[in-house]
Length: 432
Image (cartoon, rainbow, N blue to C red; front, side):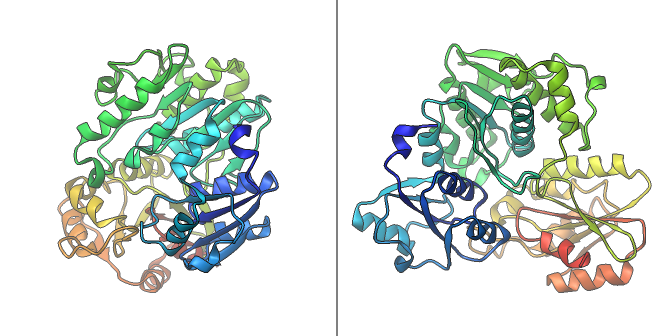
C-alpha cells in the first residue's frame, strides 16, 4: 500500500460514498483508523453497513456535510461539477481526488493486478481475490461488487493489489498495472467513446502502461482484443491455454464464467500459485452480489435471482447460463434498462438478447446520471423485443410488477431481475 500517500490522512470525506467503488476506499480508510464521513443521494445497504463500521453518512449533498478538519476528499465520477460539497472543498484548498485518481494513488508502489474488460471484470476480480487469499498471498483487493463476505474490500499485508479497472471516461488509465487482465472488449459506454474503436483506443493506451517485465492476460485471438495489443511491450498470456475446461468445476454457471476462471488461473500461475490448489479454490467460488445471485424463494417455491446484466451481451450470456441450469423451467426476466443513451444506441442488440427467457417484463429506464430522452422509452424497447419474442410486456411501477408476478406465479418458475439500477428491490419484495 502507498504509505507515503496515506500517512498524513487522518480525516477523509467521500462524496457519493454509497457507490460500490468509493465505498471500498472509505472502508479501507476506516480499517486504517481514519475518521470517515461521506454523503449520498439516498440511503442503501452499502451506506448502512459503512455506518455500522464507523463512518458518519449524510443523506443528501450539502456543504455543511464536509467536516472543518479534512485531509482528503474522494468523489464519485458520477458527482456533477456543481456539487455543493465539491465547491466548498475547492474553496478551502483540500486535497481532492476522483475515485479513479484515488485508486491510482493507492496502487503506487504495489504489484497491481488490474482486471479490465467490458464484461466479467467483477467476477474475475473476485475469483482472483479468492484464489490469492486462499493461497495465502495476502492481497489487498477492491472489487466492484460485494463478495460473499459482504464487503468489497480486502485489507492485505503483501504488496499485491488486485483491483477492478473500469474503462468509463478512461478511469483505468490512472493505474499502472504489472499484470493486466482483459476479459473482453465490447461496444459499451458509447455515450462517451462514440464508437467501438474509441473503446479499443482506450484499452490500447492501458496496454502500453504494462512494463516489459509485466504480463497481459487476455484472449489474443479475440478480434476485438487483438488490435489493442499491437503496441504491447509486456508478455501476452493467453488465458485460453493451460488448464483444460474439464478440470474446472464451478458453482457459477455459464460459458463466460469458465473464461473468467481461466483468466483467474492465468494470474495465479504468474503469481506462483500451485495450479491444483488454484483450481480447488475456484471450485469454492460462489459468485458475488448481483451476479447470478439467488435471492431466495417465493412462498410457493419459485426461485428468485438477481443479476447486474445491463448490456445486451451480458443479458444474452446470463440467460444462456440460466437456461443451461434450468433447461425445462419457465424463465421470467424482469429487465430495467440502464441509461437512455445505452438503450437508444444498442436498441437492436437489446431486442435480440432475450431469446432464452420465456417471458420478458420491461420496467421504466433507470436514468442514473442522465436526463430523460423522449426519443427512447421502455415501451419502444419492448416493441423492438417483440420482433424476436412473443411474450413481452411493459409494467410501470415496481408494485405493478410484484402484483402481476404474485398473481401468475407457478411453483417451478425462475424469476430473474436484471439491470444495473434498483430493479433488485422487486425480487426482495417477492421473497419477503
